[in-house]
Amino acid sequence: MKSRVPIPLKKLIEDKQSVNNKKQHADLNQSGNPNSSKTEKNNQTLQAKNRSQDSNNDHTKLISSDLQFNLDHIKKTLGNSSDIVTRDFQAGKNGEIKLGIVYTDGLTDSASIQDFILDTLMVEIRNSDLDVKVLNPSDCFEMIKSHSLPVGGIVEITEFQKLFHHVLSGDTMLLMDGSPIGIALGSRDWVDRGVQEPSSQTVVRGPKDGFTETLRTNTALIRRRIKDPNLWLETKQIGEKTQTDVAIMYLKGVANDKTVSELQSRLNRINIDAILESGYIEELIQDEVYTPFPTVYNTERPDAVASAILEGRIAILVDGTPFVLVIPALMVHFFQSSEDYYQRADIATLIRILRYLSFFLALLTPSLYVAVSTFHQEMLPTPLLISLASQREGVPFPAFVEAMLMEVVFEILREAGVRMPRAIGSSISIVGALVIGQAAVEAGFVSATMVIIVSLTAICSFVFPSNSMAMAFRMLRFLFMILAATFGLYGIILGLIVMVLHLNSIRSFGLPYLAPNAPFILQDQKDNIIRMPHWSLLKRPRLIGKNDTDRGDVSSPKPPR
Image 1 (cartoon, rainbow, N blue to C red):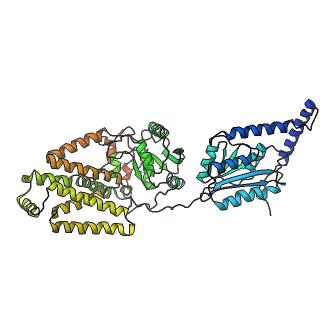
Image 2: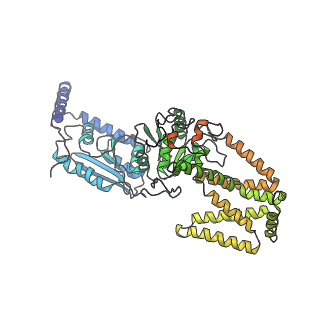
Image 3: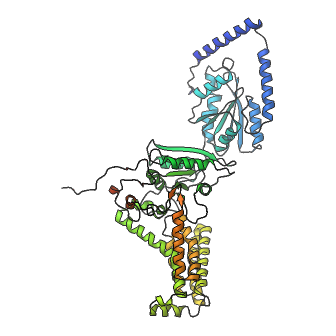
């Protein structure tokens, strides 16, 4: 069988032989005894000293030059776990090279380990001129790394802490007797969910792919859309126990350098034992803690993240979750959908107006009903007032208790529909709402008008593209109902004033949350409530993409003459 490993080592070995002969001749001139065992004794003493020091250190110590000690220490530290595979073997013509590999079963590609690591080192390297008697261990290990390993990712490791991180991440660790250096070989391969359509942010027109739980797959989905060398990716490990890979992606020269530095500073300050989902990162880096409004945007859609990066924002990807964070996040971003840019401008504008209308209906409809029916009956037309009074004739509860009861019941049904198995969850929530609502009206607990209002409120809350903003409105709805039952319309107006003042005080990485409305930026109104055609959107948002605001120079289309 012809060897796949090109190792033209003859000249290098001759040079090493010459160097060793000169050293031996120098030793002969100094000691007069070429067979002295002084060097061997010194090596044995040094090795024993290293073992003694290694045994007193923890798992953050340096890798020892003793292969057997390294393998035993790895097994002991990992508790002799059954999924940790260790294998020691001999390589070279006469088996003079002692090597060992360590990997995690289930996180590595077993076929690549067999074909490109074990087969190469145990079989094909025997046809080379590699001889450990001529080359010292460090040179021998360097030549194995440079000439004998057909593996893409190779990282030199000197500390056990990094060794454990690579092994538990799916890499294969190669160790050699006599060398205090290990080599992490890229062999990560595990079963993942694959790229599927996002379940939380569906669109009628647009890409159907979504992020997965694998970090490298998610970065590839973004790279596929932005083929620019200025798209930078920085990765670090956060979590003392989990060592979760957290990456940030941004467009160098477009993203604000101060925002990038601030994000890196906040990530570096995180000192926690585990990061299991991007929600951990969101809570630890957000500007405002005590607010119902989200200041960090999250999405499952790669096209939404790519569009945000092109605007100058920064994406935060966390290994193990399909939800990617985007900062800075302003309030207008939560009312915009990726599909707005795939439809015509007039259609997208109409849909956005419907979203803002749904915002007010979902937030204020129950509270307006409570306030008018309790304190301001004179504002209603007489026929409507008589109809409402006749419906509430047999209801034993005040309007506030009636509305609060129906809202709580509907929230329970919605939560039950989410947590139940998917096959029956939606049917249970729909049937439960219909049956309970009809039965409540017939029993006289609530009026038919209240059922209609609660249903309208629930439908409007599903219009928002972002679930985080919808959750904020669901919480504020109960607060406005309490204000309406206490002070009537004056309480609702007071609540709106306090909410607007609170929104004005919120910042997302230093940017005003209500921008471009407060402060008012005329340039950014082209992509706010009204979405202008693409040929007029030639400027990035002024507060976000400060470094490079120009997107191009495109004129409006004209009919042919």
